[in-house]
Length: 413
Image (cartoon, rainbow, N blue to C red; front, side, top):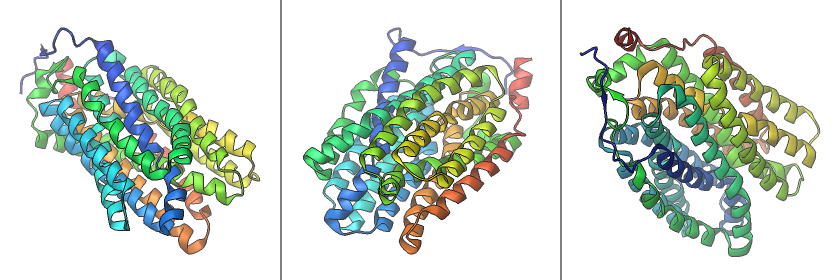
C-alpha cells in the first residue's frame, strides 16, 4: 500500500462546489421532508381504514430498518459508481413506494409500499449519500461545516413539509397527498446531475484507493472509537423516529389540538436548521465526541422535563424548540468523525454502517411506540426508555478518540 497521498480528480469543470452543495441540499430537503411528515398520515389513514396504530407503526418501523439496511449498500455503490446513479434509483423507488402507500387497500401493501419501498428509496436518496459526496468535494477543514449545511437542509425539509403535508391532507386527503409526493420525487434525478461522480472525484487519496471494501470493514470494526460511535448512534435513531411518527398522536392524546403538533414538527425542523449549522461549526473547532455526549444528555433532560411538567400548548412549543436544536445536530460530528478516522474513499459505506445502527434504533422506537401504546394505552414507558438511552449514549461517546487510524496517520507523517 503506497504512502503517497496524490489527489486524483475526474470532476468536470462545470461541477463547481456551490452547485453540488446547493443541489444536494435541495434533494436532502425533499427526501427527508417527505419522510418526516409520515406521522401526519397516521390518524386520517387509520380513521379511513380501521387499522391499528401497531399496523401503521410496523410499516414505519420497516421503513426505518430498510433505510438503514440500504444506506451502507448504496453508499458503497455510490463510492464506486457515482452518486447520481444511486440518487436516481432511490428517487424512483421512493416515488413508487409513496404511490403504493397512497392506494394501499390492505396492511400488506402499506408495509410493502410505505415500509419496504419508501425505506429503500430514502436510504438511496437521503442526506447520508449526499454528505459523502460533499466530503469529497471540499477540503478536510470544511467538512464538518458542509455536513452541518447538508443536515440543516434536511431539517429545513421538516419545517417546510410539516405545514404543507397537513394542509394538503386537509384539502386533498391523505391518499392524494401521498400521490403528489410521489410525483415530487421524480424531480430528483434532474437535481442530482451535478453530483455525477464516484469516490474518485475530488480530493480522494491513492492511499485510500488501495484499500478494498473488506480491508476497510476490518479496519473500521477493529477501531474502538468507530464501534462506540456505531453503538451510540442507535440512540439517536430511537429518539427521532419515535417522535417523528408518534408525537402528533401523543399531542392529540394529551387533549391538545392537533395544530400544535404541526407547529411542533415545524419548529423542530426550523430550529434544527440552526442546531445543525451550529453543530457543523462547533464540530470543526471543538471535540466532536464530547459535543455528542452533551447532545445526548440534553435530550434526556428535555424528555424528562416534558414528561414531568403539566402538558399544554406552551410546553409542546418549548419542547419542540429544545429538540429542534438537538434533533439532527448529532449528524455533522458523527459523519465528520468517520471521515477523520478513515478518510473519504469508503465514507459512503462506513458512514452508512453507522447509520444502519441508527435505523435499528429507529425501528425499535417506531414499532415499540405503537406496540406499547396498544397494550398499555400510553406512550409513557417509551419516553422513559428514551431518557435512559440518552444517558447511555453520552457514556459511550465520551471516550472516543478523534484521530485518524494508524494507516492514515503514518501516510500523513
